[in-house]
Length: 147
Image (cartoon, rainbow, N blue to C red; front, side, top):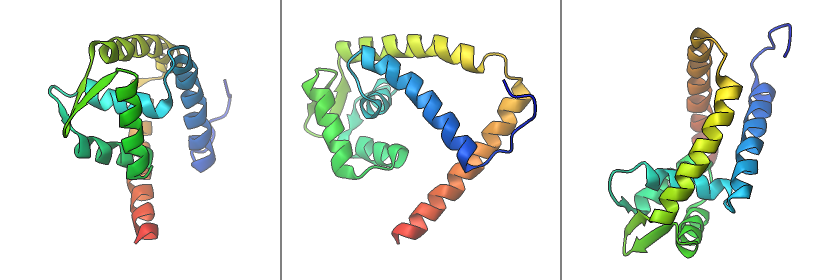
């Protein structure tokens, strides 16, 4: 643990992101899943009903900053693995998908509790506000660069 507070910047954000992602990918690897698959599966798992495929792809594109073809490919991978079913334009989670999502969520929940557990609520709130602002601004910059 550091004794002096580091300045929040892109490097610090990147280091935290990649450290946390490496933890998640380690868990996912034990379950035979990828980061992109987990992000996509989560969107289907938390929906209370089947998800429109195009809406799902749009959410994946927005979350992961990938192109639509890559997001469609991930949906197909999940279908091939039997984690979702694709019926026309509807994507539904299967029992196997729910089981995988529950297992990964439980395992990462325990790890997250160790990582985040003793950080004061006011620090988490401040960090959340900063991260939301950074995300909003970065998305605006990305949109301007893509225009």
